[in-house]
Each structure stands twice: as C-alpha cells, then as structure tokens.
Image (cartoon, helix red, strand yellow):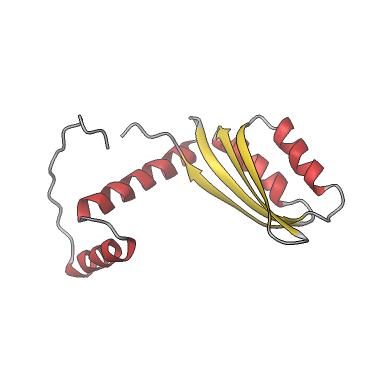
Length: 140
C-alpha cells in the first residue's frame, strides 16, 4: 500500500462462524491483522474480475512441467510463444531430473489471448502439468 494514501475505516457485521474462519486464516497465513487479510481478499477478487471482463491487459505466470525427451516438444513450446498475440516477458527453464523440465513463462496481454496460449501449450503431447496463475496491475 502507498504510504501517502489515506486510510478509510469501515465497519462490517459478520456471523460468529465467519469471523472465526477469518481469524483462522489470519493465523494460518501469517497476517498481522484482519485488515491486511481483507485487503488481500479484495485485491484477489479485483484481479479475478479484470480477467473475467477481458477488456484490459493482464499478466500471468504459466508453470509447466514436461518430458524434454518428447520429440520436438521444446521447439513447439517456443514456437507457440513466438507466434501468439501475447507478450512473453520472460521464461525460466529448470531441469528437474534426466527426463523432466519445469518452465515458468511470464506473459502479458488480453485474457483471451493468454488463455489461448495456455491451452495450446498444455495440450501438447509430453506436457505433464500446466497451471496458470492470474495477476494484474492494480492501482489500489
């Protein structure tokens, strides 16, 4: 949070069971206060909404695990990154063992374009795992 930004205090009413769950999450996730957890939950929802609207640029991280012995797979993954209407900001490639690689690909673009890239990569033969972490630039 910007240190120059003023804070507004709000009051909310919650059932005891929901408040107890909120407090359990604060402890489990190491938050210093209820306010910090609620702010994070709101930001998370704002990111989800931005992705759902689809009209603004967003960012994401695609994490994939694959068998690098699969003939032509690494070339196909690279070709897809070069030919999509998504800005690939960077990627990191790690060898997990003799057969398996883990790659993270940070992308920026419209949600539909990013989803299209993710589907294309995750459907390739030899890709064992693919997961997209959605993010967005938030002014709040």
